[in-house]
Image (cartoon, rainbow over all chains, first blue to last red; front, side, top):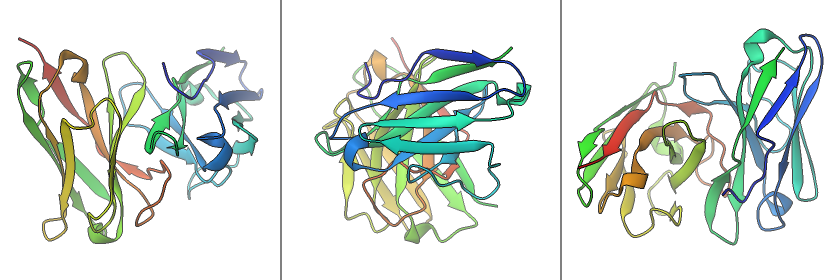
Length: 110
Length: 122
């Protein structure tokens, strides 16, 4: 049971927009930066968003991140079949003095 | 191209030990913090440990604290994870990952290795 809560799955049609939520508390999301990762089947995770809303070089602006209070959100616009993957949020938990990942969300592009 | 290559995985009996290595190339290894992250078969990602760029700061997940030890040898551009008192629930693919900072209370991993599988079974 992760300290960060994500929906197990989301789905949307190609070209549409989807959001994935990540809910935490004041000891983690509320006071620390959030990162988002994409994991395609059989591959290592890939950094999509860091410091709540920044994109690494090479990540298209279809991917966006935001944070409000103790929750964070990943947004993906213009969905493509290649976006089908598992998505994870991650942050530091100051009470645990440890990093934490959300349970992951499987995105299906119908 | 930043490269991280893990090695040392394999099958070990419960209670046994294993040391994982992560060889880094094409970047100034000694300038960056490093993480270990694991993924049990069919499960999500679990953060394991972080070490600062100079090895002076180390933090662990509660699930491995007291059993695992993260270390690094900057002269060899190599990260390690010493795993002792292994349990069945430690079975996972173990990834090493680079943090773009020298150290910080974040879980930002911009480059990942391909992972090495550790199986704890009798």
